[in-house]
Image (cartoon, rainbow, N blue to C red; front, side, top):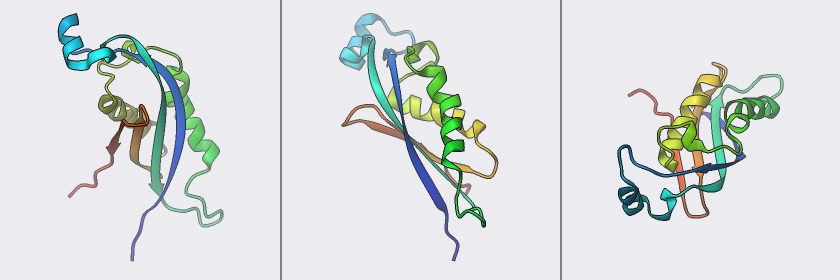
Length: 135
């Protein structure tokens, strides 16, 4: 029997953004995105899930401090308190989940697989990008 062991950690990223479509007029943005077409902020909760082999000595998948530092260096410090629209082409929850996934995937050690990044934007809205195993 084979199985995968994973750990998920949650981080907070307070940031601003504006939802807008490429080439959209202000009127089109308002029609498509409503009030979110204006500058506003969120305290994003970002859930990061990684998998990999357990260390035979400690029983850990990854030292939590190491994972926290990677996420802090890659996502939290560069974007905390900023306007995400200045850093990313699209800042919908879906697009942010995909962008954050790619940033973290490049930063993780090869012993870990990034399984999922879930961006919780509000109590009602969450968006995720997941690792897909080749068929």
